[in-house]
Image 1 (tube, rainbow, N blue to C red):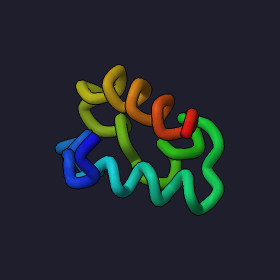
Image 2 (cartoon, rainbow, N blue to C red; image 1 turned 90 degrees about the horizontal axis):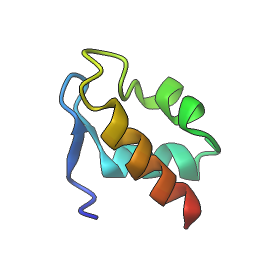
Image 3 (tube, helix red, strand yellow; image 1 turned 120 degrees about the vertical axis):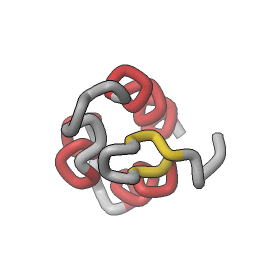
Image 4 (cartoon, rainbow, N blue to C red; image 1 turned 45 degrees about the vertical axis):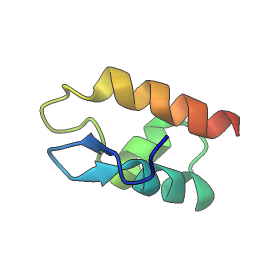
Length: 59
């Protein structure tokens, strides 16, 4: 996974932003979503964001 990959174009959220939220203590997708705003705009990235966050949380 490329850390610079944009997951959410509405808010410019990248994989690196998602990882930072997790590193800072977010332990669920909803917590990552709250911190980064991923999936809260047009919601077209929601399904993909859930998959990516799930993989990052498994690490």
